[in-house]
Amino acid sequence: MREVTTIALDTGSCSHPQRMTIRDGSLRAIDYPALAMLIVHPEEGPILFDTGYDPAFLAATEPFPERFYRWATPVDLKPGRDAASQCEQLGYAPSEFHHVILSHFHGDHIAGLHRFSNAAIHCARAGLEDAHKGNRLMSTRRGILRSLIPGDMGERARFFEEAASVPLSPDLHPFERGADLLGDGSLIAVELPGHCPGHWGLVLNDARHGLHFLVADAAWSLDAIRRDVPPPAITSGFLGQTARVRTTLGSLHHLWKRNSDIRLTPCHCPERAAEARKGE
Ligand SMILES: [Zn+2]
Image (tube, rainbow, N blue to C red; front, side, top):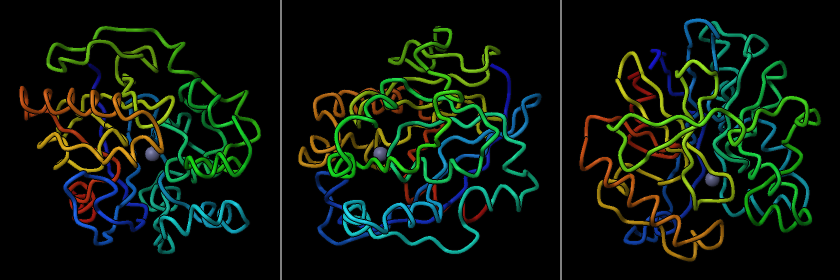
């Protein structure tokens, strides 16, 4: 695989009871960071995987019924912590990005899209179609804030389902196939079913970490993957499909047990966010 570099960006957090994300968690509310990943490709330049929180999230959750989303998961976003601002601080203007990759369409993953207006948007067709189903209240209940989807999405979308399907390295067993997003083997999207319709992760060869699997919301933490403990059915069934969430988590657990050298990064993992804050 072509080598790329990554920088995890901690774009703020929301708080909710730990028990919502892991079946044996406490009822105490804890902070869940939202990580975006800046990927630097040798030819394509900077690429973003998920956007995390952005001031646009706060604007989108100002009116009702979207305000319910913010009440359910109160957000802490400090000025300058959104992905676009952090990319700028690192020397990458958002207008320079030719590619943004979305794991799925929940508001905390797409809120910053509006800042990357020149980028192709790689995403699941199934996710985009699902995001447009139902009325605003039904969408909001499922974590979708439709006003965050750019108006020119139709022209900019590049669907995972239409990218070349390629076999994955045997190191990634039991995951077998992925979608080669750029056609050069550097960024391979891998379906991780269950969390919501059209939920995918990304495999890359990271200059600092070796094989690196960005698993988005297939688990809320590395702890959940190591111990194979899913969220309670009330959470997984509310957002997606419980049986598929558990199968996907089981596959990630199996992968980690077979090859703990592979770096796994769940989007909301407190361990990974602590590393990001230390610049690791
Ligand atoms: Zn999600």
